[in-house]
Image 1 (tube, rainbow, N blue to C red):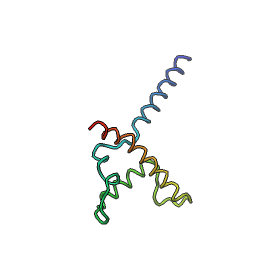
Image 2: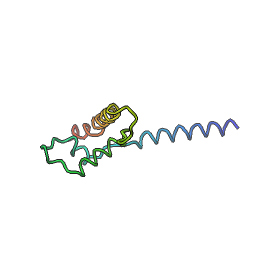
Image 3: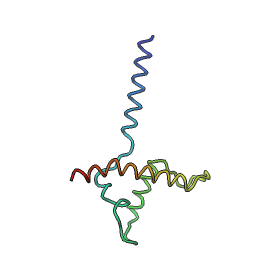
Image 4: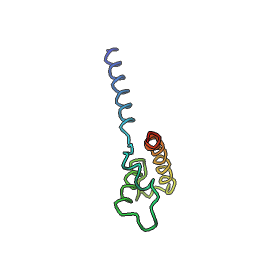
Length: 96
């Protein structure tokens, strides 16, 4: 029975580690696009805005939820997205 418990604990730890690694990461294409690239006023497309919204939603922002924590939830998602940019994108710039 103890061996089974240790096996299940190891399996659970591996699953949690894999889930953390499989979290949202920015691709090189995303790193050089909006919202990280300066875009002149009025030149942002609807598709770019939807991509940004998708990235924010992947990081915990839920538009339309009337839970009384707006704009804190949006700001928290933006902070995580900025941190992901620093982790995923700035290392790309250093390599080139």
